[in-house]
Image 1 (cartoon, rainbow, N blue to C red):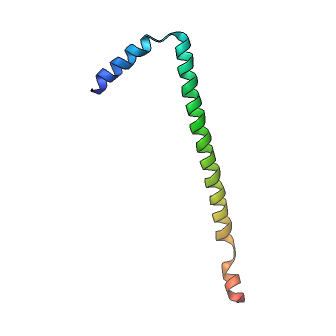
Image 2 (cartoon, rainbow, N blue to C red):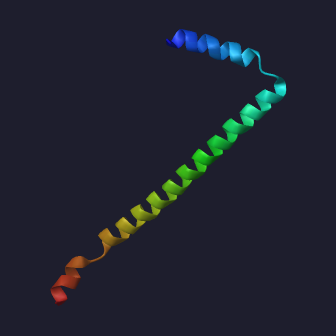
Length: 69
């Protein structure tokens, strides 16, 4: 099955949908996008926290600590 026949069959399928089916399909796609965005936000928060922790650790005066021992 090539891409042209796939596009044609998808457009034929879409033309047969009722309006309420479009609403359900849009709601499902919306929920999927919200889930993806929430997961991406969690990953971004963890990344920012780790970056901040790395910046704090890099700015600590390790040289002063080693000289005292």
